[in-house]
Image 1 (spheres, rainbow, N blue to C red):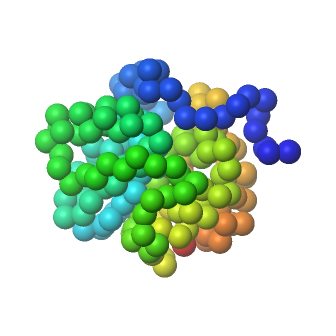
Image 2: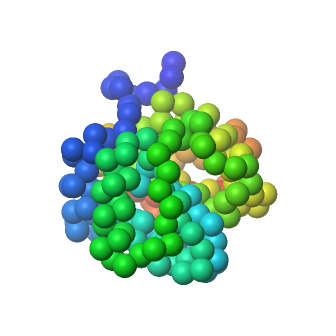
Image 3: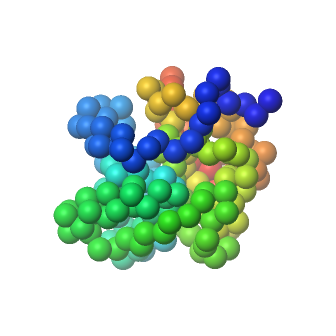
Length: 187
Protein backbone atom coordinates (compact mmCIF):
# COMPACT_ATOMS: atom_id res chain seq x y z
CA UNK A 1 0.00 0.00 0.00
CA UNK A 2 1.50 3.30 -1.02
CA UNK A 3 -0.98 5.25 1.09
CA UNK A 4 -2.59 7.09 -1.79
CA UNK A 5 -6.27 7.74 -1.67
CA UNK A 6 -7.71 6.15 -4.77
CA UNK A 7 -6.17 8.45 -7.41
CA UNK A 8 -2.77 9.16 -8.83
CA UNK A 9 -1.19 12.02 -6.94
CA UNK A 10 1.03 14.45 -8.74
CA UNK A 11 1.58 18.13 -9.13
CA UNK A 12 -1.38 20.27 -10.05
CA UNK A 13 -1.09 21.11 -13.76
CA UNK A 14 0.05 24.70 -14.16
CA UNK A 15 -2.92 25.26 -16.49
CA UNK A 16 -5.15 25.03 -13.40
CA UNK A 17 -2.94 27.19 -11.19
CA UNK A 18 -4.68 30.54 -11.58
CA UNK A 19 -7.52 29.49 -9.29
CA UNK A 20 -4.90 29.02 -6.57
CA UNK A 21 -4.67 32.82 -6.42
CA UNK A 22 -8.37 33.18 -5.64
CA UNK A 23 -8.84 35.65 -2.75
CA UNK A 24 -11.22 33.26 -0.96
CA UNK A 25 -8.20 31.07 -0.26
CA UNK A 26 -7.27 33.68 2.33
CA UNK A 27 -10.30 32.64 4.36
CA UNK A 28 -8.79 29.16 4.69
CA UNK A 29 -5.27 30.36 5.55
CA UNK A 30 -3.98 33.80 4.67
CA UNK A 31 -0.35 34.29 3.63
CA UNK A 32 0.01 36.67 6.61
CA UNK A 33 -1.23 33.97 9.00
CA UNK A 34 1.24 31.47 7.55
CA UNK A 35 4.09 34.00 7.90
CA UNK A 36 3.14 34.40 11.58
CA UNK A 37 3.13 30.62 12.08
CA UNK A 38 6.61 30.34 10.54
CA UNK A 39 7.91 33.21 12.70
CA UNK A 40 11.12 33.52 10.67
CA UNK A 41 14.18 35.59 11.58
CA UNK A 42 14.63 38.47 9.08
CA UNK A 43 17.83 36.97 7.63
CA UNK A 44 16.58 33.38 7.20
CA UNK A 45 17.31 31.19 4.18
CA UNK A 46 13.93 29.59 3.43
CA UNK A 47 12.88 26.91 0.95
CA UNK A 48 9.34 26.66 -0.39
CA UNK A 49 8.53 23.37 -2.10
CA UNK A 50 5.79 23.51 -4.74
CA UNK A 51 4.98 27.24 -4.56
CA UNK A 52 2.46 27.05 -7.40
CA UNK A 53 1.84 30.58 -8.68
CA UNK A 54 3.36 32.10 -5.52
CA UNK A 55 0.26 32.59 -3.37
CA UNK A 56 2.21 32.41 -0.07
CA UNK A 57 5.62 33.41 -1.45
CA UNK A 58 5.11 37.20 -1.48
CA UNK A 59 4.34 37.41 2.25
CA UNK A 60 7.08 34.97 3.23
CA UNK A 61 9.68 36.84 1.15
CA UNK A 62 8.59 40.09 2.84
CA UNK A 63 9.01 38.46 6.26
CA UNK A 64 12.73 37.84 5.56
CA UNK A 65 13.97 41.17 4.13
CA UNK A 66 17.62 40.28 4.76
CA UNK A 67 17.15 36.62 3.90
CA UNK A 68 16.41 34.65 0.75
CA UNK A 69 13.37 32.64 -0.25
CA UNK A 70 14.11 29.75 -2.61
CA UNK A 71 11.19 28.42 -4.65
CA UNK A 72 11.50 24.88 -5.94
CA UNK A 73 9.00 23.42 -8.37
CA UNK A 74 9.15 20.52 -10.81
CA UNK A 75 7.15 22.58 -13.36
CA UNK A 76 9.03 25.50 -14.94
CA UNK A 77 5.68 27.08 -15.89
CA UNK A 78 4.74 27.32 -12.18
CA UNK A 79 8.07 28.96 -11.36
CA UNK A 80 7.56 31.46 -14.20
CA UNK A 81 4.09 32.30 -12.86
CA UNK A 82 5.42 32.75 -9.31
CA UNK A 83 8.33 34.86 -10.56
CA UNK A 84 6.01 37.15 -12.50
CA UNK A 85 3.82 37.63 -9.41
CA UNK A 86 6.77 38.28 -7.07
CA UNK A 87 8.46 40.71 -9.45
CA UNK A 88 5.18 42.60 -9.90
CA UNK A 89 5.10 42.92 -6.09
CA UNK A 90 8.60 44.40 -6.14
CA UNK A 91 10.17 41.41 -4.42
CA UNK A 92 13.78 40.61 -5.26
CA UNK A 93 15.07 38.30 -2.48
CA UNK A 94 13.94 35.13 -4.24
CA UNK A 95 15.75 32.37 -6.15
CA UNK A 96 13.95 29.99 -8.51
CA UNK A 97 14.98 26.35 -8.83
CA UNK A 98 13.45 23.82 -11.15
CA UNK A 99 13.77 20.43 -9.53
CA UNK A 100 12.30 17.36 -7.92
CA UNK A 101 11.47 17.42 -4.20
CA UNK A 102 12.61 13.80 -3.96
CA UNK A 103 16.11 14.72 -5.24
CA UNK A 104 16.68 18.33 -4.21
CA UNK A 105 19.44 19.98 -6.27
CA UNK A 106 20.54 21.86 -3.12
CA UNK A 107 23.39 21.74 -0.61
CA UNK A 108 23.06 19.85 2.66
CA UNK A 109 22.44 22.01 5.73
CA UNK A 110 21.83 25.17 3.71
CA UNK A 111 18.35 26.24 4.92
CA UNK A 112 17.05 27.65 8.21
CA UNK A 113 13.49 26.71 7.30
CA UNK A 114 11.42 24.95 4.66
CA UNK A 115 7.68 24.88 4.14
CA UNK A 116 5.09 23.07 2.03
CA UNK A 117 1.45 24.08 1.62
CA UNK A 118 -0.87 21.42 0.17
CA UNK A 119 2.13 19.66 -1.39
CA UNK A 120 2.94 16.67 0.83
CA UNK A 121 0.13 14.56 -0.67
CA UNK A 122 1.35 15.31 -4.20
CA UNK A 123 4.78 13.80 -3.59
CA UNK A 124 4.99 10.30 -5.06
CA UNK A 125 7.00 9.33 -1.94
CA UNK A 126 6.34 11.60 1.07
CA UNK A 127 8.93 9.86 3.27
CA UNK A 128 11.66 10.38 0.66
CA UNK A 129 10.68 14.04 0.28
CA UNK A 130 10.80 14.61 4.04
CA UNK A 131 14.20 12.95 4.29
CA UNK A 132 15.54 15.14 1.45
CA UNK A 133 14.28 18.21 3.32
CA UNK A 134 15.97 16.88 6.46
CA UNK A 135 19.22 16.79 4.46
CA UNK A 136 19.03 20.40 3.24
CA UNK A 137 17.90 21.89 6.58
CA UNK A 138 20.54 22.91 9.08
CA UNK A 139 20.41 21.18 12.49
CA UNK A 140 17.53 22.73 14.44
CA UNK A 141 16.01 24.02 11.19
CA UNK A 142 12.24 24.40 10.88
CA UNK A 143 10.05 22.30 8.61
CA UNK A 144 6.47 23.52 8.34
CA UNK A 145 3.81 21.38 6.65
CA UNK A 146 0.37 22.85 5.95
CA UNK A 147 -2.56 20.84 4.65
CA UNK A 148 -5.83 22.44 3.58
CA UNK A 149 -9.45 21.42 3.38
CA UNK A 150 -10.56 21.04 -0.24
CA UNK A 151 -7.21 19.63 -1.41
CA UNK A 152 -7.93 16.15 -2.79
CA UNK A 153 -4.40 14.99 -1.86
CA UNK A 154 -4.48 16.38 1.70
CA UNK A 155 -3.19 14.05 4.39
CA UNK A 156 -4.77 13.94 7.84
CA UNK A 157 -2.94 15.47 10.82
CA UNK A 158 -2.08 12.14 12.51
CA UNK A 159 -0.48 10.91 9.27
CA UNK A 160 1.57 14.11 8.80
CA UNK A 161 2.83 13.87 12.40
CA UNK A 162 3.74 10.19 11.95
CA UNK A 163 5.58 10.89 8.68
CA UNK A 164 7.53 13.76 10.27
CA UNK A 165 8.49 11.73 13.33
CA UNK A 166 9.58 8.73 11.30
CA UNK A 167 11.74 11.04 9.13
CA UNK A 168 13.60 12.18 12.27
CA UNK A 169 11.83 15.49 13.02
CA UNK A 170 10.56 16.64 16.40
CA UNK A 171 7.03 18.00 16.12
CA UNK A 172 7.01 21.30 17.96
CA UNK A 173 3.67 22.97 17.37
CA UNK A 174 0.39 22.46 15.52
CA UNK A 175 -1.89 25.29 14.39
CA UNK A 176 -5.46 25.11 13.14
CA UNK A 177 -7.82 22.20 13.44
CA UNK A 178 -9.85 19.80 11.40
CA UNK A 179 -8.59 19.38 7.86
CA UNK A 180 -6.73 22.71 7.63
CA UNK A 181 -3.67 22.80 9.84
CA UNK A 182 0.04 23.60 10.00
CA UNK A 183 2.57 21.37 11.73
CA UNK A 184 5.92 22.94 12.67
CA UNK A 185 8.73 20.48 13.34
CA UNK A 186 12.48 20.77 13.97
CA UNK A 187 15.25 18.87 12.29
